[in-house]
Image 1 (cartoon, rainbow, N blue to C red):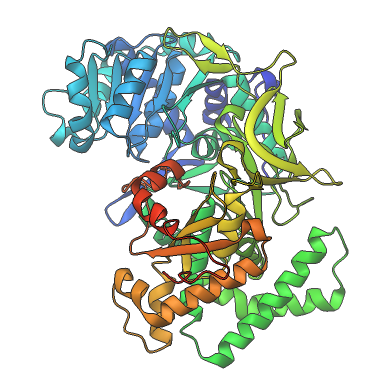
Image 2 (image 1 turned 180 degrees about the vertical axis):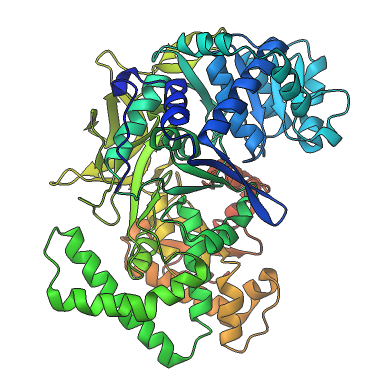
Length: 616
């Protein structure tokens, strides 16, 4: 069960420094923060964390950081980042993490807009993008602090800042500073990742975040002091909640994974009891499992599929709130112990009791796939502007494919066009203006328009349709959810990524990307030489299978939603190449611009039904 700790105040009165003080005093010997060093883990307990935070706060104060000012951070998931964030909060300053993949013009925009005088960076890669801003008269930036001492050049190092903090630290001054913090004070500013246009600065208060953490905690069911594997960027609200704020509330243990690509290895080593992944992470994990299954003998696959069926049947009873038949429960337990857990254990997934996803609609086939392994992904929905979660599935009530029911104290209503509006104490006050004030984003009654479209069922569960601004309106006036079509065609394991286009057109076309893990395994199982994706995309057997996948998807879609033409691309999309945000959401505008000529080519010839070039 989730640890029930003494709160140092009512939920609406909590602050981050008050939680850290409680953790050091009452749970000081519990592990708080771990990170990789060499072949092992280095760990700080909660007492050590608070001592380091106090010293760092003194160091940043000596550097000139003042209450209320923004400090920018561009580092990976490393201890310097996590500790700096808390140290700044204890000074009353406002940490602002910037995505490490941000382009120079995005960095310049955020530096100018936030009016920050100090930025804390990781190393040379970051310095190359930040140093030119020191000479830019339009940017207030004055000082850079660098974590990697060997790469700092003339700039202040994190180590020297910590050392100066140790020299000037005064316990009474530190205590006085954090005790001046009020729940309504800003805790952080999170800049949206910018799927379109310039990012917006979302200012969140201690009260916003603390109520969010308390209410999420009430909807989960975890063992005491559960570890959290922290691998998503701290510039994303999900990891700020899960990797900083909830662990402070729970006095839990954070395991920092600096390289997101190493999260699989960390899971295999640590066998966590909880795991959060954005939909693309769960899709990739499912693809890895499917690739392994494809190599197994037919008899073993049949045994696994039988166990999967039992797990899905059991999940169905739970989903409907029904008592699980005793015979089914007994059969499932045997299958879990003898078939599922040994295989899950190879991936480190055998101890999971809470799994979740958010940020985008989860493909239902991926949810059902994991349900077949006894893993129920508690999908949630929320925005940066809502401090994270608005609705969440939980063990005491879930619907696979939905994003759950509202958290305590949050209201939802749907507009006539299906847009979701929300209000409550976890919803932000407004967007940061360049002068430091806040521009309200609410209507006269306090409702915030989320830009998402959905429906509420009779049991109060929310089902997402799509982003309102991303809905396709065809030339005959029909509304189409691109996510619905994309997720349907991605149900075939060969198709890892998809973009559907058709705004203002009479029919839909699609760009499809082979799954980089499944495609080679699929080819090998059929005696096809597993070359690069570019070669596999041109192989006749692969093209035929993709054609069959599109046909099968179309059979489940109405005529307006069907894909009439498509093209299989030769490389996967990612944050570095620009098609995905750092949180792995599709940047539709970027993809449409990058492949504009290809999309136009799909519309170049008059469409005939059935299409003659559907396998292009």
